[in-house]
Amino acid sequence: MSDKEDGSPSKTRKFKSFLKAGFSKGLSKSKEEIAKGKAQVQHTLGLGQQPSVIPPAEPGLVKDSREVAIGWHPVPGGGWLAETSLGQLVSKKLNNYPDPTQHWAILVGDYCHQLWMDENLDIIYINDKESQHEWTRFEVGKTKLNDEALRQAGEMVIYNMRMKQKGYNLITNNCQNFALNMLDAIQIGKQREFGTAMAIFQRATGEGKISDLFLTTELPETEEQDDKPPDQVVQNASKVMDEKTTKLDVHKSHD
Image (cartoon, rainbow, N blue to C red; front, side):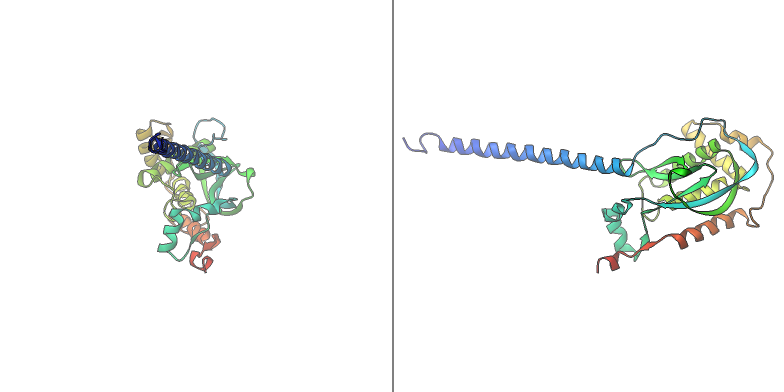
């Protein structure tokens, strides 16, 4: 009996099916390994929500003004953002962009308030003790909000930013944008505007009652911050941030 007569075509089909099954299994395993690798990177970078370190308290005002600083510290491995498709897209549109390894935040008292990312690279609010990092600080303004009020302010700012753009963006939706937005919200002279914005945030989320404090309490019309009106405080902070942030030139780095 010949090979053809004893079913070689059937054996060939079985062999092909075996290879196909093996390939599919290998592909599936590769996808699992990629997913595990992605999760490991996310864990290493600390992506994802983190518990608040600010002690539970009632939001409110403090008697004496508190210094507000913007500050940055290096983020090890943060340059991976520049290698993503987002970073490559930016490099095609612009000659340079802010160094993603310089992470900016708002610093008040013992705590820092900052924009971070979840596992999907969507922006979120987190806070931490300032002592956890070596910050390069720049005093830019003052506030009368206590720590819990500042925490709620940070949540509100991120909520408003996510309403416009949920995903992180190296240029338009980053830690610098958050820091300036939060500074504008919490600085002296903007309490009533802050109360109105917070009321909208609370109606949308059902969280907190901080807006009542700012909408019902008698507040001074204006208070000066180092001879600067509120709008100039943010402009000055933006200028400081721009001057102190390293700009990466992707085209030069590829030469």
